[in-house]
Length: 453
Image (cartoon, rainbow, N blue to C red; front, side, top):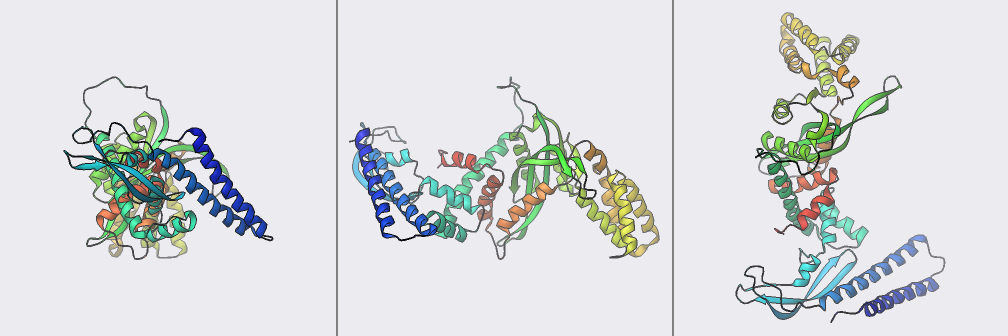
């Protein structure tokens, strides 16, 4: 029978008074305790009080048996009470002993625990809070470190193998949610209907794409393609060269997707993330990336009306390689040539640089192939190299946002000695991306409450 409010209050107060008495007794026995000793004593008692309070509230739920019995989820008929069964789970407050009513359907030969459904228990041994912490940490550090952190900080015991299993289970749930977003956003439009709500205009937005290598067992090193969607914000920034304050564009509010596979699916994922963030309501948009052809092919497919910019620093890397071929490794002539052509490149005259390199290549056969390669890079991307114009118009000209993201993925997936199964990596990639995008809580709620789980 369920307790009254007064009965439950009396039980909780008694538990609190008992813990307070223990703290006072400890205080009387301890002479000049250190802060650490005080913290340890209080934390231990707080944990024990939390366990007792949680047990009391849960026990009150256990006392309620549905009459008539619950409907069978398969056939809909009433299920019959078959007694109480115990379960021990670990929650964030400590160990919890449950006694749950068990109901059975004779027709379908299946049973269920209504209390498990009410408490949303999706694993035999851990509460949702513990599972969420374990999966979240798995997206940040190695599984053995997750075990260590939970034990040290939360006094939660869960083995690294159990952490791995839960990360795989719930990572697959995250993967399913990302896949649903991808499919939904890339469906061909159907019959036009009036919008359900007025679209609010947004500021400027941008997209950037890059790749990083991770090792897959039995396959070797594979490219993990990474995409970033961001807002473009112009704000005062100190110029590194002059020290003056100038108005420069910055990529802010970044969110990320990643895919271990080909560009087609990846492009759809990037578009899905852009659409989720109301890309089509943006006042204007840009794509900024290095010169990889697959990136610009995706830009044409999904972001055809966006401004295109080859990352300034990648452009400078190619210019520096041309200078090295022409003037040697570390010579004064190389520095002079590079400084002069840097201005030419920034002002949007990549075609001039291409012409110069092609002209020199005709007379220096020993370096002709290398110079033609760099000339081709500048000629092919010249329309994407209007750096001064883009900067003055308030656009980002560097792809540091996605390069940083690629490094963050690499930090989790390409550490010393790391070798991943394909499924193991694919299940954890969306967890890592959700953490980096500040969407973990949102996707966790959807995954945990999915009827598939």
